[in-house]
Image (cartoon, rainbow, N blue to C red; front, side, top):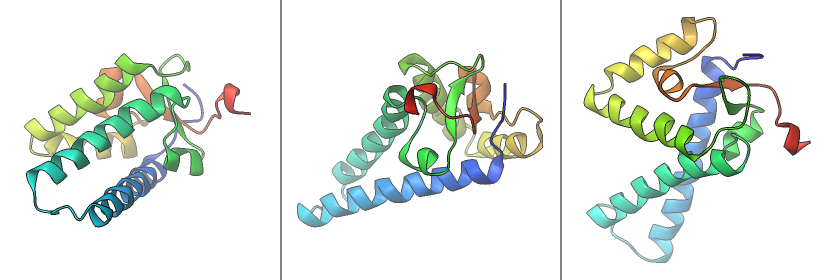
Length: 140
């Protein structure tokens, strides 16, 4: 593992990505005059978020929009590009663990990224990934 990304840049990328998703969903809600409190709207937002965080890095060399802006990306532990199964483990299974533990595992993960030398969180350990500042060779 090389050039690992720390807590603050990872948090910043997640916040920026959440804002991006919120802006897209907010625009759709406005254009289609959807009820923001409806279960359908909330379900659409949840599915869009999951698809974004799973599919985007799968097809764009481990980047999300914000990760690309901040020059970080998700890679497998051996430094190769992530694939669909890796991202499903990382985002979906990791998310389920965070939800089942009522966020306690998420807090533990934040400390892990902040304190561990390899900066890997619970979802990284599950999926065999880490976040790096190394650019994708395919992206140059």
